[in-house]
Length: 223
Picture 1: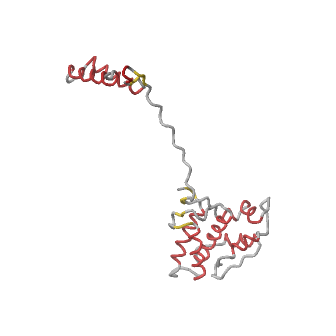
Picture 2: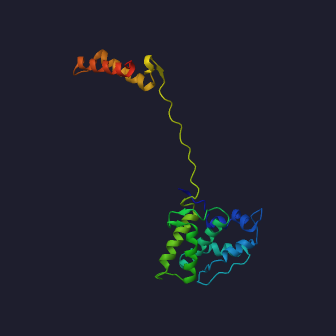
Picture 3: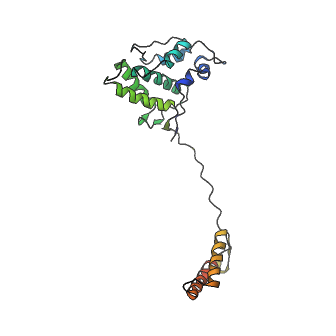
């Protein structure tokens, strides 16, 4: 899972978005690229009153339409978010083949049904039965535009941490390894030696005997 890489309506309406949409190096361009105009008009995006919006090459008109969207008519808010997502995919901010976790479909799978909904009903105000379906699509599209989680086509890279260094040992007779004393083993040896010397409060003799056996087992393996 990884962020979608999407950018929002605000990006496409500021100077950074303007540079991409108009090709202006300063971000003050006035004319949309022809490919952008074709992309935006490939779906029946709506106005506030439900009529179909036809995009020209005017960047300022596009910006006004984009930022003027409200959810009073969901068929206006949905196309504003949809326009941003179409631009996100077109300019490779978002991989259209990535799996969107919000909708449980590919990102491209969000675009077609949204266009179908807008073609079917352009005036989804309160209590309109189509409004809920459009709002659900709008929410998932907005999540993708806001860098929401997706499953990428190419798995995320992962570096496995280096394993800890093994405890050093030396070969004794008959190739039986003997621990030389890692930090943990030195602590165990100290504890067992203390018990062997002092015993335990309940049974000094038994404690010494058990500690002695453990010391022999850990540090003096049988040949």
